[in-house]
Image 1 (tube, rainbow, N blue to C red):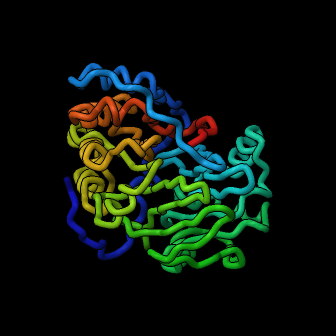
Image 2 (cartoon, rainbow, N blue to C red):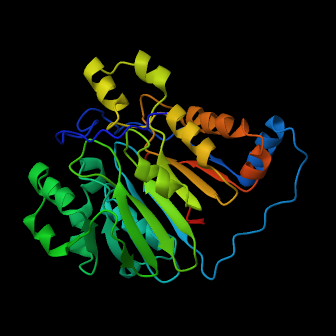
Length: 330
């Protein structure tokens, strides 16, 4: 597992900026593995007798999660409760985000902020459009990320009116949530994951676009009831694919993207019965398939002696590139 800490020297354009044309591509093969199927998978590997179903997560209020799209063509997700919520990244068409939320009974006046993981185009392209149409929303990102946006993208300077600086390892509040940014390694200006705690006690860790499992990623992921983590590429597909060698090297670097095997090995190491939801994000269009990523995760977890206990209550999802997911209750 790639775990060494090797900070990037200089920010570069996104790995896929301007590279792929996705206009005529459709989502295929993305699927959700529900808990009942995960239990069947576990039984096929585990040698232990079947156990009683785990009790439901106790919470005074439920937390909800939805992805509007995940990949190099655009990234945006919603996390919220019955009263308020926020967006993680803003790389999906603003009208799609608004209409999808409304279709699920969530109006934009309940969205309190956009938290940005980094400054690449597929994560920030629609931020100003959302902010301009909803002037109560704040933009939460580190000063270096914000400067990277202004420096590298054609964004209105009026976006400064919405910026709320945040700093890694300093917790801030959004409604009933506390959010702690933490260091991840990628080739943006200043890349962050987020550890999110709800007043109900539910915890969630989000880390998309990272090249290795750094110590801070390891620290926060182990505490999470729900995880969103990258499973970007299959090593064989990348090695034998059509990308030029320099781009293959950047993707596979410690500040590039995570491959399925690294993600699977890490999850199989840290998983415990508290982990109820595992969402695989930012799957490569050309160097991965949802079924490959899901199978790699399944196999890694199923090698553990306690696989049945671990998998019986787990929801495993490969997030679609273009389509919105259901509104999941965590």
